[in-house]
View 1 (spheres, helix red, strand yellow):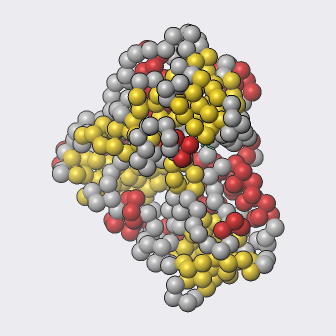
View 2 (cartoon, protein in one colour):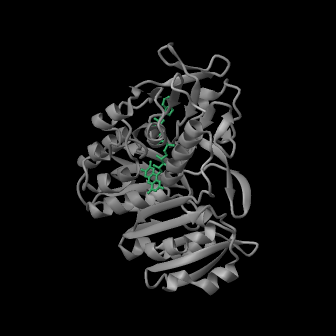
View 3 (cartoon, helix red, strand yellow):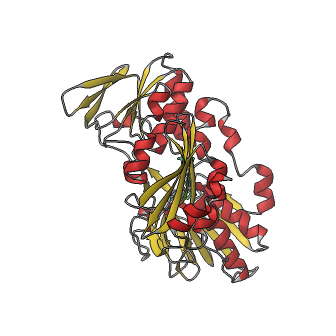
Length: 406
Ligand SMILES: Cc1cc2nc3c(=O)[nH]c(=O)nc-3n(C[C@H](O)[C@H](O)[C@H](O)COP(=O)(O)OP(=O)(O)OC[C@H]3O[C@@H](n4cnc5c(N)ncnc54)[C@H](O)[C@@H]3O)c2cc1C
């Protein structure tokens, strides 16, 4: 449990880090808190980067979470533009790029993920969208190209689909290049990805599947994407949405267990007084189907992690109840939402709506037990069915109860 003489050091001033600092104060912690972040921006929200901000509805500043008043209220020492490069668990110190060290009684790792880079000739000129600096770079590039220009999106996943939607709204001609037979098939499984397949073309966005890209070369002022089959595509800008990698390199010599993230237990602890939260945490997740070790890149998971860890450290008690992961994505004019963390090979049954209607709700199940819910533009039906993930529910019982029909 935390005492007022303790000093909590949080590395990573993103969403999870900031939410944790606020949660500590809300829970009543009165001691010292230091938040270290390598970006120069005060903590902000990332989802609007590919939505309201990219489309031009919001100024980027509006995504700021840590406003000057909130920073003052949180009584936090905020070290921005400051990169952590090492962790000494014996001394409980974080080593900074400047060579300075910061000692804490409790450490929280919240360093999130970064966009995966691909190895093309023109790599340094291609865009990704993870941070406000990325957004600034992309905005500058888009300002220099004419409306109607082709923008190639490498990767048809969540970010690719959202960026394509925003660019289409702005009058560009996005072309989504997906390596697999269908976008999101590895994330959502065969059936669900099939139902989503036509969303892009329904709004007039070109989506090409099975695209094996050999290289992207600069062809000033445009770019040429060359494909394995010998064909090519000329684009005025190229954006890569190829997934994310956890920021754990700075922990290589720390002695912590790293395995596609920082491995932590059910309470988000790597060891006593050292925790990891948010996108970087590979945590033991207890669900209606048992416990498994997962790393989940969802805004709401980071939010719940922050609240749970703060409560545990301030009160000494764990928050009751299973955590039900939640994710949403605004793509091709629709809202896709998911509850739970189903596996792509879980069985799927659609219980309401249809792809033709442009809205539906489906249940995932494993061994006859509901493992997840996914909905397209059916937010109410989804939320009315959430309790199926709070306690084990057979698929048969869920279908018989049919709360989505009310
Ligand atoms: C464009 C975009 C759209 C998204 N849309 C959605 C959505 O619609 N729905 C949804 O559920 N989720 C969405 N997400 C995911 C969501 O934003 C993340 O789950 C959330 O930001 C995770 O928070 P985090 O604090 O763990 O990581 P981050 O927000 O990535 O924060 C980590 C911070 O740590 C910093 N850092 C890294 N290494 C160091 C170091 N060594 N020293 C100091 N600082 C360091 C990073 O620079 C960063 O500022 C989206 C993400 C992006 C990028």
